[in-house]
Image 1 (tube, one colour):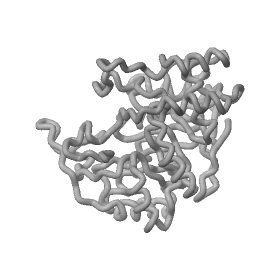
Image 2: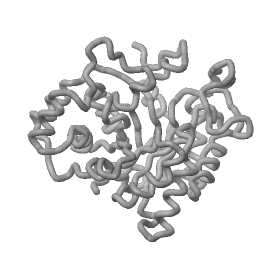
Image 3: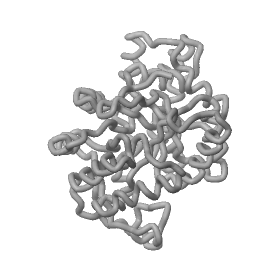
Length: 323
């Protein structure tokens, strides 16, 4: 497995990891265990996915059976938006570590640079964007990013996180963070696929030695059930796009493999998810073919800035990516 070297620690982050979003709790332990057996070593988690206990159970079973050592794994989780105040950041990672059954994380990300009013674990866990779930009320908290980041840096000093990073951030806010960070973010995780290539942000982050992890590499696949895909406008699912299918046919691979290869060939890490053992295996088999410059360009040209993840979907009046 190819890996990306992180600037702060020289830790090796596998290029192809495994996402755990939308894996049902009842299946999650077995899915994670199977993924480790297939060779995955990077696992991307978050409290809001509501399955970190089960992810930890799958990891423990694989370690107990001698399939993998903890030192061979690269485990990622995230600080939820209701824990951005400095006194809550450590509580967030400690709960995640307890749920996962781990002593440290290889990478801890701020899930989104949007602070919401704190809700204690005793009142609600896994966390929700809603301060009042019955009335579906969201309350924004005025916590500056520099306060949260300083608390994230303390997690590195205390050994709870080897690397820290940021997710779902725009360029101007990243520039602001870099102006005061004593420990630079090792990783920027973002929605990134051929319909949303984000070249300028990718190039800027790389110029600052910040590694990129792409989520939603298959574009719209996970979002149809959430009502954020406009099917009425002639939208073509990314996995059914003729350009992608033609390239896949040229290399005798799947459309999913082409999309993963497109990212890793740019030295971008990916975290695809599947509960199917065959697809798990295929998603890792992206190093036995190379996309030509012309194929890369034809995929890049599919960009039309279609975004499937936007805080404005759930945080009315907070158009984070607005121009």
